[in-house]
Image (cartoon, rainbow, N blue to C red; front, top):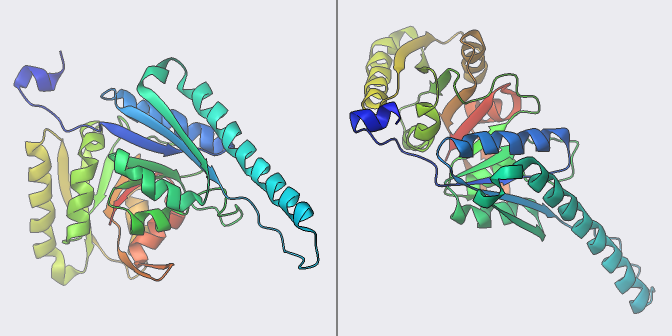
Length: 288
């Protein structure tokens, strides 16, 4: 019997998780992390991979049969990419296969992930890699801005995981941060302690202190051990101060609102969101 069952408290939990797979070592570690998070409450785990066939330049004088064979070859290559990801997923899931399923398709990764998120509470993605083709892996910013679910971004090398370690909430008094905290409750319940911080100027410190104390009390009512703290802005990027605080406190998770807006297919991210997406050495949970 857990301490929550003894006290009559029922923690929020993830019922279903979606994790994106690729063939890299980071992809394997990402699935292992997804299995660990799913194990907190026996969540259903959905693995997904996608690959968009490379479209060759079309020679208008080429024969139709030759062009059709070329396109078929590229589709076969894309299907093979998805097949290898499927094998990796089931190899890592192992004995937990009864709580898992696979969804792999030929198509554009970001679009397919957004569509599949209707079946999950949380999606787990790797950080954007500028050297990797977007036809093979989704851009977290694309997914974050287009979907109605929170996104957990996993860095290439996970020194400290988000389960059983300290967590940091980068507070900003807006709906995105409120949604992120609510979405993160299952992980925050699994953290050893949660630090609620707001980076602010000296003039804003009193108001900021009241805000973070409110959030810490809210978390305490959910059974989360939380502290509140204001951090004086140093004039540099606030994302860097948040990351430094997380590293100083041995955190394995940063929770923040995902700020920005879409301009056609170009996502315009806020400074803090962009900094955390690009540079955080620990997992970041964002909600837009």
